[in-house]
Amino acid sequence: MSKTIVLASNNAGKIKEFNALLGDMGIDVKPQSEFNVEEAEETGLSFIENAILKARNACAHTGLPALADDSGIEVDYLDGAPGIYSARFAGDHGNNEANNTLLLDKLDGVPELKRSARFHCVLAYMRHKEDPTPQVFHGVWEGRILTSTEGQEGFGYDPVFYVPECACSAASLPKEVKNQISHRAKALKQLLASFQQTQQDRPF
Ligand SMILES: O=P(O)(O)OP(=O)(O)OP(=O)(O)OC[C@H]1O[C@@H](n2cnc3c(O)ncnc32)[C@H](O)[C@@H]1O
Ligand SMILES: [Mg+2]
Image (tube, rainbow, N blue to C red; front, top):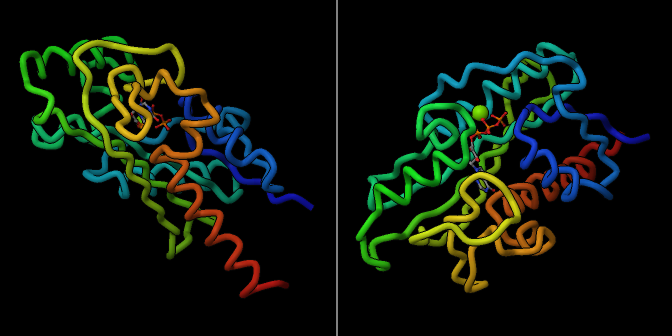
């Protein structure tokens, strides 16, 4: 019998990646839109707090275990901005084009060595709304901000994020490659290892 988990996200790009990453794991992951879950208010001051708020909200609305992803990009030249405000950097929530344009503008003329940046992905898994021990996993993907957009794949800040290990932008990578090396892939690998360990520790 496969386990059903609610995915506490409304971001289509993330949902696609989760489906690809969890496809053959025997876990049935359903987006919260299938349960008409209202979006949680992201009032936390850290990725961890926001991920827990989203997971708890989905558990409360569905009575099912939930997995949430709070993620974003940290740019050193901007003292860590946009960070937890990545989705609303340019004002409107989720306006990727405006966010990328603003980021490129803010780094206009900044030399390559000072353009270091990283994606963070924090996952929170909660068994139920009162779960006192949410499981939290954190993946990081290092790179730098390009001087113009490149590539058509992915979502969000992928077109402005240069991946040194592949010598191209994240949006130039085939999705199979991004899903091996991204911040989200790294956090999910930790989660799957932890699920497997729990299964071994508590087989019944
Ligand atoms: O809260 P949910 O419903 O999951 O959806 P969201 O888009 O609001 O998600 P976040 O609050 O976690 O904000 C994350 C922001 O960081 C960006 N981001 C996260 N992961 C990314 C990735 O793999 N590639 C590009 N941008 C990413 C994304 O586009 C958002 O603007
Ligand atoms: Mg959000």
